[in-house]
Structure formats: structure tokens, C-alpha cells
Image 1: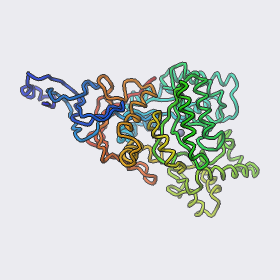
Image 2 (image 1 turned 90 degrees about the horizontal axis):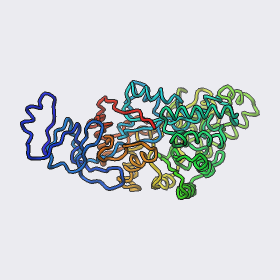
Image 3 (image 1 turned 180 degrees about the vertical axis):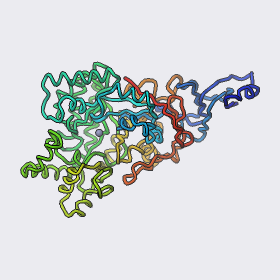
Image 4 (image 1 turned 60 degrees about the vertical axis):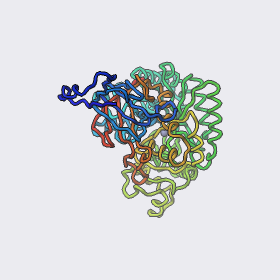
Length: 518
Ligand SMILES: [Zn+2]
């Protein structure tokens, strides 16, 4: 291969060096000599990747070609893969804020596309948000769900109970508008208020609207544990929604949360495998951590206590009878999550508790753990890392062909900065639970398929040039529970829509991502 690096103003001099006998190709970016894992699941092959504009235009052995390239990336000894796709993030706030729109936490993991508004939340102004991103620029590509909790909140506030026909019609209209503006589907957070107040039938009616518009249904299920209808009951509810609404369903952060349901991954997998065999498209994502991340209130309060919002909650605490009922249920919820010591405060405005677990806080304050939790909730709350998963269930889900990688990244949990590298360093390199090609596939091509993201997720001629080049031996998450915002390492180059965003490990300042519409 003869490579001529094209520098503006020097082309005349360089053209003298260009031979005439060999084939010639001109690229904006040439990624040279890497081990290419294309995302389809096939093993690595040494190849060059040529990019022109926002597309991959050549892939293979270009050694007999004279190449004129503006930028040459030396990938020898490194892995070249499709930029990773994260189906579950909470990045809308970052992407809309011009000081954080680089989405660096994700770029440094090799992620080039994120989906957000998961768990039923986020803005219902889909069109306006996508326009803002296009106008201001975003570091990665991004797509949006419309969140059922937000839709319900916009029509019914924090009111419990079923919707009236008029309210249901209003909610259907909100979903339809959001879908028309480019949402890729509807997400739910049926564990969280106010989404949790919706009966199954209401969710089905809204999912039908998303289905008619060609969207998918993404669900943080009603119960990943033993709170209400149970983990298996929730899987059944989710499958029912998909079946009755005729919509592909994607289960968010699949897990068996808490001692009561440890070991139930087998039952969950059989239900999903059976549903898939019957023709339903049921898929899931997963983050490779034993702790989930949520709020103290969401983790411990019974949902009925939140009906009506904060003032109602305070009133229930002020009433000795309801307070006693809440305390009893909170005590059980704490047990199912593994006890007070398993709840670590990770992000909070409440002074003096950050980095401590609930047991330590209760001891310092000389009161029972549940009372300390109530103090924290009433003082404004806190994010928690809740250590509630067992590694056998994690691995059991991980190796299923219908499970992909998703960070569910949120403030205070290292998964936002570490999910994708951790999967490779821990579950490929160390534990050998997955091959590298499998890990790449379930972080790119498979995810694109599930989310109906066109022309991304694989390395092939004609596809968008979203590419990550990483060093498999140094690929590693650095974020920890005490220090959850440390950027990952090992990712050397990231290309987003043909533009180099990470160059030799350093962010270039480019915001080449696109707002993706259904
Ligand atoms: Zn969630």
C-alpha cells in the first residue's frame, strides 16, 4: 500500500509522488491494518477500512492500492469494530446542554449511538428535542423514545387509578404526535410513579399507537423483584402487552433483583424463549454490574404512598397510621434489596451522606435504617447503588442471543462511564463468558436490528462510518462506585458519521452525531 496523506495546499507536490500503474483510492479517513470485527458475529479479520464523507466506502485488503487520505488511523494490533449502540441511557439532559453535549462518557467507551427517554420518562417534546440536538450538535448519534410515565403525567399528573376514556384518548394523541415527530417507540417505567399507576390494558392501548407507527416497546417492567406482581408476573405482563399490541418488545436491564428472586433467570429465559418461538419479538438489554441504580424513595417506598405527589407523601408520613404502614412496607423492601448495608448513597444534595451506605448513616444518626431513609427522602432524596444481583443470573442472561449491552447510565452509578469496556475486560478477557465477536455483535449490530436503526451497527461498504478502534488488552472501565465518573480507557479512535471524535484517546471537540428519527 502506498499512502499519500492529503494536506490542503500540498496536493501538487504529492501528486508528483502518485504512481499511475496501481489502483487509486481517495478517502477522508483510512483505518489501516486493524483486526476488523464487523458486528455480524464473525471473527476478526485483518483489513483496511476506507471512509469518504459519512460512509464506509471500502473494506478489505487495500495493500495494492495507492491511497490518498486526509487522515490515516494506524489500527495495527488493535480491534476495529462498529461504534457501539446503547439502547438504554439517560443522556437527554447531557445532549441538550451545550457544555455536556459531547456525550464524552459514552464516546470514551466507543459508543457512537445512544437511545434515551427510557424507563417511561423524559420529555414528550420529541420533535423540539431532536431539532435542538441537530442545531446545537451532539457528540454521538441519539434517538428518543416517548415515555409512557411522562405521557400519563402530562394528562393525569400523579393521580392513581385507571384513565377515563377521554384521558386515554388524550394520552393516545400524545403518543401519536411523539411518534410522528420521530420517536422510535414508547418506553415504560411501570415500576415508577406515575407510570406504575397505569393498568396493563392502558399500556396496551398506548403501545398499539406506537405499533401502528412502526415503533417498538421498551419496558422497565413493573416488578423485577417480589414487590407486587413479581419478576415472572412482570415478564408475563410484558409479553401480553407485546402480543395484544402487536409490537416488538425490548426488556430494559434484564435482571433478577433481590434475594427473593435470585435463580429465577431460568424461568424468565424459558418464558422469553417460548414467546420468541411463538413469533413474538422479545429482546432485552443488560448492564454488567451487580448493583442497580435508582433513588432511595423508588427503592424503598411503596408506590401507593407516592400517589398524588410530594405533598400527599408528606401528609401520609404525618399521619401515624399511614406512617406505620409505610414503615412496615419499607422494612420489607429493604430486606428484599439485601438490607441497609446494600444501599450506597451515590448522588445527593443531602449533606453528609454521599458515599455512605444506609446502615452507616443510620448508625451515625442513632436511629433505625428505615427512619434514616425517611429523613433522606424528606430532605430531597438521594441516588443509590443498590447491590441486589447475583453473578449467576447476570451470566445466565448475558449469553442469550436476544440480550444486548445497555448501560442505563445515570448519575452516581459507574455504568454510565464503564459498561461497554467492562463487558470486554471482565466478561470477555477475564471470565470468557463471551467471545470478543459476540460481545461486539451484542453491542452493535444486534442492537441496531432490535431498534430498527438503519445502516448502522455493522462495518460494511455503504454503511454509516461509525467506528471504534480499541486496544483489547487495555480496554477497561475505570469508573467505580466511589468515583463513578472516571472515563474508560483503551478506546483509541472513535469515528462518528465519518468524523474523528476521539483521536489517539483524546476528544477532538467534534459533535458529529445526528438526531435519529424513526
Ligand atoms: Zn430502568
